[in-house]
Length: 279
Length: 281
Image 1: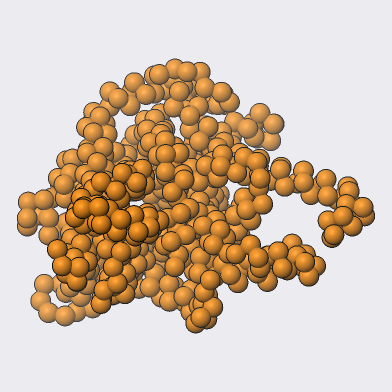
Image 2: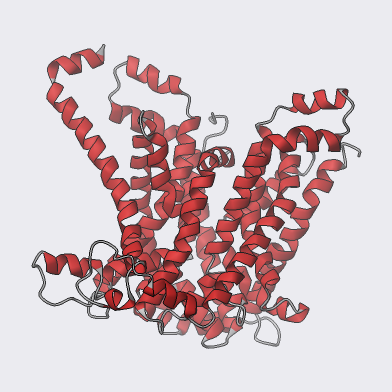
């Protein structure tokens, strides 16, 4: 009813409002995309163009900067280290986190509140700072400057998310399905592997990818804990003062690409996960 | 296995892991901060606080958080409400808006460096439009305001997405009936937003703000990429203590100071935005 009167009174205001709305959506999309596009131009231009002025506003599709990046001493190793650490983080955070997510969604047990508090506490904490004391501890145990040592710290960062995402995933699967499987002769374990696991596998993949991105992007702990075996972020950070512009931009672009793909892959789960995590 | 023991077996790995890599290092860092070799002392704190860079980096960090977080909150709220009433293209718009979520602070710093550096796109645009004759070196000590602006823009660009995701998820949890009822009684869209959406969104606002404010005090790589030494911040100083000055006691003290500020602000946010008992959805 109010719509009808509004239409009758001021159709112009309505149309203006609509255009304003569409314009702001387009503007906000451009706000996100245009800076990435600028980085893309720089990456796909020759080193000379990157350092020249003024800049072209479209890429010239020259692989000079990327070739320079690939040829820069230590860069490919750093890239490899980043992938290794992120892959380890991914595996560990799911293997350790998923059982806890299952426990939270299926059981009521004394101490559950305390456990949830511990998980939430880690999330509300400047975790990379803890890399400082761990540096000392790792030297004592021989884990210093290894991919595994860094992966352990990154797993600490990723675990709260892994637990919360898997918790929300398991909660989305009715307990009755499992119970039906038990009556049909499955044990708890086989009911889990044959009924629950296939259902949540896509979600598990999404949370694994999320863990990968967390590790891939982490800068501070990586810079503190690695010296010879730098990850890509640590390597770029360390060489910020000295490296030429085209190296920075190519490196930045390599950092961004997985992010674009991964966010696309997990987009469906992002919101479900935070919906649960808010409670 | 016994259903009473099973949950404990399942949460055991996480608990052990967090004790070893979260609680234990926390104890270690406190020990390191409060000792210089023999016994309890506050020397480390005295040292870092009296260093000439400390007030500047503290001020910079707080100013940056004060400038960035409110803008992000407003922007995220705007985006979340816009997405909420969108019928067509919701998925693609949400994907685009959440892209920065996967981008690291270092990469975000580099992206905005491409815009603000001397031969960058801002200068190219301005000279194309005839505003400047010579490219200006924005990121130098002669333009402290622009350095601040560049860092703030990069942070707003990068980290609004995390708030957006939390708020979109939160708005999705609010039952549609409330807004429909308000509409029936003739409440304007603005009134519906301030009287229904905002109060109902309080738990999500709490989560989003706590997370964002903590991350704002941890700002490090964006600053390193854009400002370098021009714009000292707390986390950067911590890194400098650990690496350039090789003083891990001082670094630990800095870590505890950042931690204390984070916890302080978290408590304030939780208190201000507290959800009255029994008022959850």
